[in-house]
Image (cartoon, rainbow, N blue to C red):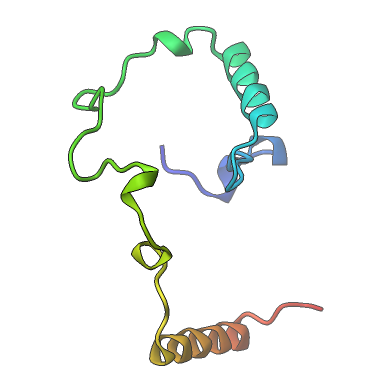
Length: 100
């Protein structure tokens, strides 16, 4: 179904992103799980989509001891990349000024 602003009749109808933080929060997870089970008690029995793997394997799978230094996962932006981002931000702010 294609959605646009007219599809929703109130703020309660507006789709929302789940309240998931970078660090796991057990209390929020348990509340979200409880809410979803109340909404749909059959959810745990819902089959995975066709072709969805039951287990992930191969080089995409890693464990903490596979990483020995921060340089393996931290990307350092070059001066040119920082200037490009700064220019894009400056342009965005010029066409979409924020009220202060």
